[in-house]
Amino acid sequence: MIVSACADEPQLTPDEEWGMEGPMFPTPPPGKEDSEHRRGLLVATNTTATQVWIARNKWEDTTTAAAAKAGIVWPAASGLDWDQKYAKWIESLEYIPSIDGFSTTVKVTTPWGKTMPSPVLECAEMSLFLRIAFAAWYELPLFFESVDSQGRRVFFGHNGVRTSAGRYASTPEFAIKYKDYSTTYTGGVWPKDTTLRAKRIAGGEDLQPMIAADAHFGAYLDEVHLNKRVGYFTVLALDYLGSMNLADSANTYNIKPESVRAGDVLVERWQRNGIGHTLVIKEVAELAGGSKDVTVVSGSMPRRQGVRQS
Image (cartoon, rainbow, N blue to C red):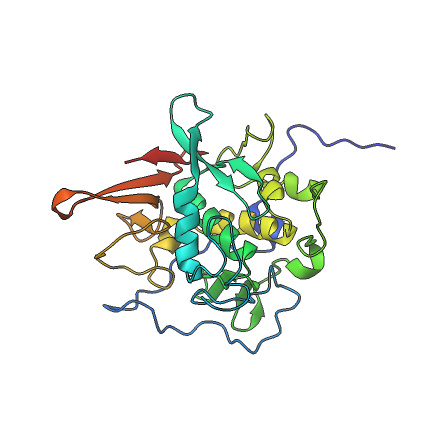
């Protein structure tokens, strides 16, 4: 017997889908200082089951074997660290017409030479997507810290969703549940994960028409990640993190900057919790008199492709 789902069958809540326990909030204010020396998770911890990807590299690496390789937009032995390479990648994203017919967006380039028009996302989602993707592709450490309604510190990162005590609630054991084709893919037909392709971001309409008329963000992630665990993790992270977490000094610096470069994020906030606006720096041009012309790319609410603004 074949049983088909009804069109109006209710979707799972994010908590039901991901095994979470309610919304996430910014960490308590640290005072006047930022959280540069705030302790995170212990390194000597077995995270094999929850791991999304292995962080084999460090953001400050410049001369290791991995750092010396040529990349998306940098030559071999470039001498750049991974933050500088991230900036080069963001700066290099090609401008193309947006699907809205009047805006300019960007084309996302992957390490496999595959290119995709910008996904349709909210503003903080765009920043999170770009940073997660780059960190996962190049096996770099990544953490976003938050707290739950009980005050427990919760870390979203390459080791999964964890607390100091271990896996958070019933969140996925990514390494066990999902596939990673990054070490076996040799070209040809791109591996697809039909379950991932059906995943959608909570909180409003999620349609990615550059994939198909009824495609969701999971389908986009399936096209840019051989490690499908990263796709699932990204949807989960975007379901629970936003500009209030990016503005948290546990995750970014709250400073009056003396300089700005591609890859930086500018976060506009007028309340501790709730919505704000996040802008990804795309290009910086020096002008006469010490001024700068800063070009940004941002999503919005409702979701849209990343729009170029200057």
